[in-house]
Length: 281
Image (tube, rainbow, N blue to C red; front, side):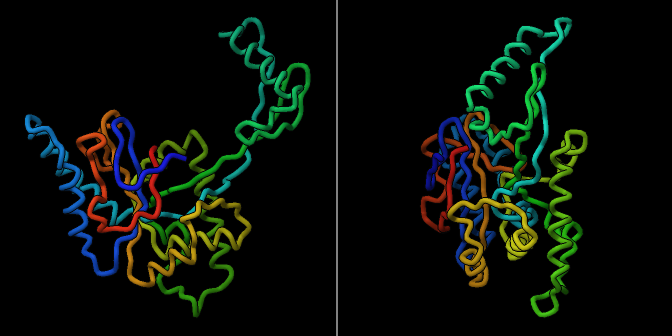
């Protein structure tokens, strides 16, 4: 995994998970971050840089307040079943399909078919190979005001009056939603309301994650995704965000900020926030 603490590369975007100290103004953070994005803008590109500055500020102001992470970790949504078969000679791209099938068959016979993409062999005949593979989901930024409508975990449900069925219902609703996303015919529409680039992590995020775990969901966590440690930070008044900064070929986005200047673009040079995790995308 490639990581970086506070720079964005020449041709890739970088994502940062940061913790903003208790009492630090979010408005001040947005202002300083937006200014830093412009620090190395070209003098002859004033009109473009001004428009991008307005978009950067709008993206930060909206998503750091209104896009909430649904759950932490990488969730196993389902095991998808698929198959590869010997093509008929009349089929389009016959040679390519035949070559692909023969390669898969050789992989099975060599015993290395399941080494790639977590595939699991179900059966193999002379003309068909059936297998399964996992569908995972992570980093689902969800509209915060719609969160309780999805999970049915409402503000009046507290630790004092919470029942086991509250977490069971929330976990089932989240899993049902994630399976819908994985269906091509409906998933493309649902993805329009999801933001994987920028969101805030809340106590509701942690509660949803624990609800999934309590109902046997399989979730893999990165080192920084310690539920107890993150909850302790939130209890202390810190705010936790994921922010993606694009540069160069990645261009502009409605869910990420854009920084000018390649390697010279610094995201957190004055250390106003603690970087919990950073990645070159």
